[in-house]
Length: 546
Image (cartoon, rainbow, N blue to C red; front, side, top):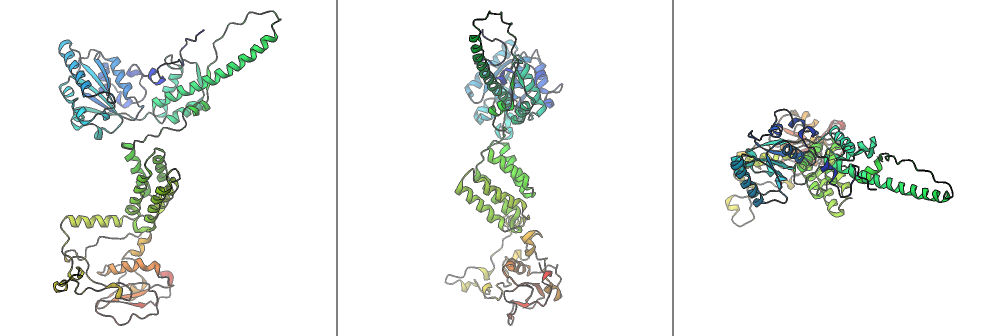
């Protein structure tokens, strides 16, 4: 005998479609859109179709109820309801709907609701075909999209429609849907018993997607039914063997068949149906930009765990690892800079490693670079410096190159004064000379202002050593020769002397700063005009120096 009870049926409509709400009262979630007097409720409750209604664009992730809301409105209203999918429909289909809608309105006084699913798949020209009908009220458009309408829907259509945002369903909403599907005659009809841990697993793996939750439930039920059928066949085979042994005994009327007990659905069946949680990530949509934004900001904020989390989301979503590597390189220069000069080296090395070994192993050097950057000291001084310099150039503040810096290699250049007075830094004892490098209009302009973070502490002009103080100079005072001081501080880590102080003195000026020298016993010799003289420091406290 064929089992005609509700539940799993061969060739049946998918469970998610069978369980679709028939009215707004059955809709779970989206409470912010279903308050009394809201546009959706007004549209659905206008049974006579006499109230004028505005067109609506429903924007939200998959499985949040966009199609469900549109069809619930269709069931509750006497308006003519037409459904098109932008995947298969074209301009011709849209025009046919518009012509029929205009005819029905003029001849019979019946208004038309056009539900257009996946409107973001329509080109600009196809969306333009909707404008006359929407603007003149021939149709009430309900359009659904999973992509940001600001980028995927033309502005004239947006301005003529009301944008409603659907939220991802929470666990309680998904629980209501799953429980209803288990007992409802349109669903599993009570033929299955869903274990609590299996129910929780379905909700967790669905990630707020009602369609995915019901699809997982149906697949788990199929697996559970197959397991139960296999056990029943094995039991029946065993019973036949017993019956053969009892053939010589008098027969007894069998007990009436009872309804079978509900088939249990366990976490094992759910695991077979869904092997991993749904990760919402569209490489060309909002999730792509939101996740990469959170990733970079987590590195900048030194939250290494959050940075690794967003890295994992991009990897699992199939993001191009080269894109991730490029963003890491940008972060190394923009957010770390010279506070940790190795950050850029590590970032570039990670990008090279990913290119060389590919995925999935490439996740490891990417993670190494992310951890390095997130835990490194931070500075955006280089980033701010170049942007300020570019802003000045764009504003016309560039001036002419000073004569002594101009190219003097060609015949006649010297007659023009090119290169005259240029002092070659390598001829100086410590490789630094003081001369004007910026154009006259920008003399004294500062673009790079190092922070007090990490390595940049050694580049800060305010970080003066004891030699400058002992010479009577104010350690925190600004000085026109701070550029030389900063250059010397860059070289400091390469000079391994116990007490690195020297007195850097510019002929005819006050002392600038104390700095290390390669050989403190070497005399700097007599100073020429404008040269820098280095003298060994007499400070005995090496710990005093940075």
